[in-house]
Image (cartoon, rainbow, N blue to C red):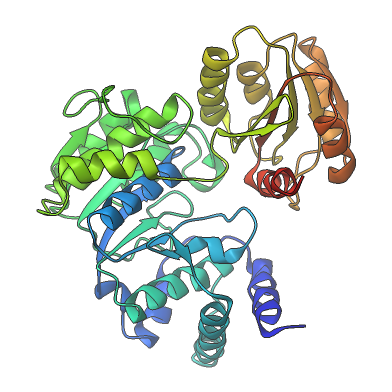
Length: 407
């Protein structure tokens, strides 16, 4: 076993501590490494959907403007190293291993000092901050892991905060309903720090209320800024126009002379983000991969599919986690003439494919449950249809993407 593999095993051993909201552990951990998050400028991004795409676009704009920019996102599709990028380049195995070794020493010290062990995500967050500080980045774009208020990334004082949107996901950990979710996401708003959002309706009211309390100027999509249809964007999917608009507005608000209209135009034509309406071609077949893992994601994917493939019969490879509103996703995403191959994402929280097929059957949608990912993929890729869509949990999408690239 290599040192890199040992570092992965150590991180995965921390998964037993689960998700434990709260900032005490991460604050103590960061004190032990001299507050690295204070040594560069930060853009902090949360939201139910689109936050990864917004983060990637912002990082591309800053890189194109000649800044040295870090990007911390989650979860990863294939490798932990995807979560830590500087100017689009993933952290090396050697740097990653060294960071984990440093963290192990600090975690042991925390426990000796009477603190409970940090979670995996807390350790990853501290690693990101230390890596970006050590590499002397100018900016870091930091994606929230879950919610906002109690997320371990919420120890930063950003130049700008971003809330892409708010929909009903992770309610059990974020206040129980849409109101609670909006409150948690609004928790990243800091005193007198501008907030950019694509939220609407009741969530927007809550975000606006918190912004007012914090004396933070708020910039709202379709009110203070708009989608610019004249801009060409590289990311596919109708929803990416909204994400691009949020990223562009955020970049402009930084008031950096280097961020010109030409820089923005170039960046949004070059940005790449894996697993979001990503299109591949295999012989005469078109394959789409999309990490639509909740109702809002399903709605966005359905809209893009109906626009691009309005009349074609479609084959889906689908798998989600059990804590999602699966019935809502089915109602939104699938047409009656679709065929759905249901498999099991690589997660302890994965939903039972047979139960999903029962829900599909109730809506007269033809489906088959194949729990084994390899067999499910074989049936999917060898389908006679020309439009193949792999959608659902990112825990599944990454593996499917890896297979598609290798064929």
